[in-house]
Amino acid sequence: MAEPSALPSAGAAHRWDPRVHPCIPVGTTAGRTESRTLIQVFRTADEDIKALAGSTPGETVALLEFLMAICYASKTNPPVPQAWLDCVENRRPFDLAVKWLEEEPDESWNLFHPVTPLGQNSLLAPFMAEHGVGPAQLVIEHVGDYNQFFDHHHLEHPSPLTAERAFRAMLTQHAYGLSGRARISGKATLGDTITNLATGRLGARVRVIALGATLGDTLRLNLAPASRRGTFNHTWTVSDLPRRDFKTKPDGRPVDGPADLHSVLGRSILLRPCTLADGRTGVDRVLVGAGELLAPLPDSLVQDVVYTGTRDKAKPLTASPARALWREAHALYAAVADRGKRLDLYHRLATLSERQVSLWAVGLIANKTAPLSWLSDTFPYRPGREEELRHAAHTGSQLAEYVAASLGKAADAAWKVAYPNPKPADKKLQTARFDARPEHWAATEQPFHILLDKVVAGSSVTESLQAYGSTLAAAATTFLERRLDSLPANARGFQARADALRTLASEFARQKAPDQLKPKEKRP
Image (cartoon, rainbow, N blue to C red; front, side, top):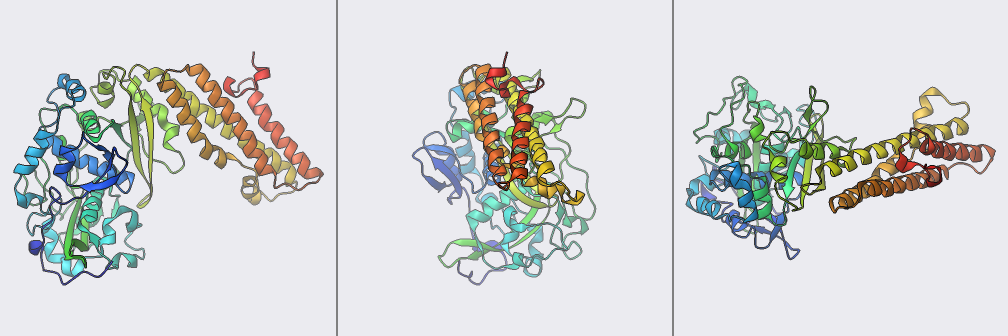
């Protein structure tokens, strides 16, 4: 992209308003992907928009959070639980959201307003010229490790972002920004604690969203009933909510309602506008520091959270690089089946009669302060099939674990023959030669989803699990045989191959092995 033109000292010469500038990527029912304005999105949410289409799962979630904040602020959500089902089934339109956006003051929605920039902290403005960095720092996937002592020369690259991309990246930072040390001088700017980045409200857990047939359906499914909606966070400096300073670490402030939570300013961000070569408005420099700190949230504001572990040690489900989300699907279905008296997302979904929806789970995988990748998966759900889905997901995960453990034992059996005099330090690398567990885990996701699809469609859980187990057992044998093909064609190689295959078969045939993995002829 071409270099930006000369810049004004503030954003006064630039106007960019997401209500009138196309910036929300959507996937239409005709199969196209296009950008629309905020107002267009709400007007056509039920007409031809199938879903949001952010560049990453995290960006898509951040955009949905922003749309939900607008819905709460405009009183589009149902005021009481009894009204939720009627709102969903009768497809209540988003006229209130459109009206609210149209009547909002223009200065509240200008991304580059010199005093009240949308979603930003204008108190950083005096420091932009000296301390601003390249806009790559705004993009979670580009920023790299937040450790301030690493080499981050790439962040000084002057290539600008378009305003719409910067806007979406800013929303993603507010929701998912990782903890660490900000690349901004506290002493030279607003205070020492502006460098202390806290983990964003969604950065440390998996967010679950109920997906409908259209974007409108999705919004209505996820909008919780609430009569007290709270305050929409337009900007840092003009608000009825108390804002922290950056001299000392403050206590987390209470959230005053869902509109506040879904639009919370998790980072102090300021964007410097520029004019791109094609005449559009872009961003060429940014400042990013610590933002809002929130008090612990009540259950009413985290209605999608999925807990894992025992009741006394339960904690929110998090994304892990070592464990795919489908392996935790049983926890998701347990949240639906074990609703108790809690009036949350899953309680409401259970009232949808026989209507099927999808549960989309999204998490950010990070190595401490370094973002690695996004983890996302979609699981089917139908009211009335909660227990069957939980049983299928739990048993399916256990079967996959048993197969993986069996493949590990088979690899060890091959290693003992192939390497008769090994050095202890070499065992891990040598065993990995015969270990087919990576192939197993990669190949099991699709059969697992087929299992859930069968169950949600009404098929027998027992028969579906039997077919799933047979698929896993046959695939495991194939994966192991391919690994063993590297053995030499001599007596030791043949013996190692035979021992490994015999070990795998015996593990599947053991009395304690799951019935779904046992050879048919040995089943009672």
